[in-house]
Image (cartoon, rainbow, N blue to C red):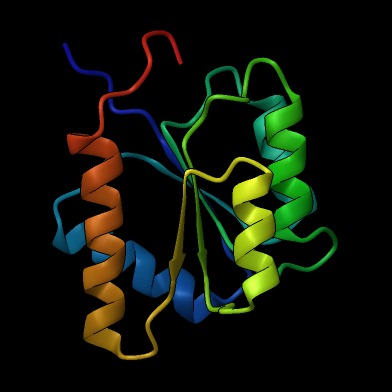
Length: 139
């Protein structure tokens, strides 16, 4: 039996949240979606969860605590340090890209502005990390 692990979407923009959920639905990605709307809430969700998500989609620019701080926290926790984290953000700042990879992001995807391109990009990210990519056993 395949266990459908949740996806943690950390996104403060309600429109981008809705588009991401729509992209997953169009791609028949049926994993449960946990949503955190700021960095502090993301850490709370991860800290209180009995099981960990199979994928974290993390925005860089977040209120309370930015995505880079959240990523740093995740990589410092032994039980979370190998979780796949994709930075899904509108930021194209070179420093954000560099720091994301330095802190251990698995991927950096800039959100397209065009609706159809956004849906396509999120669908591809979800399908790759949930279906194509081989995860570590027990993670």
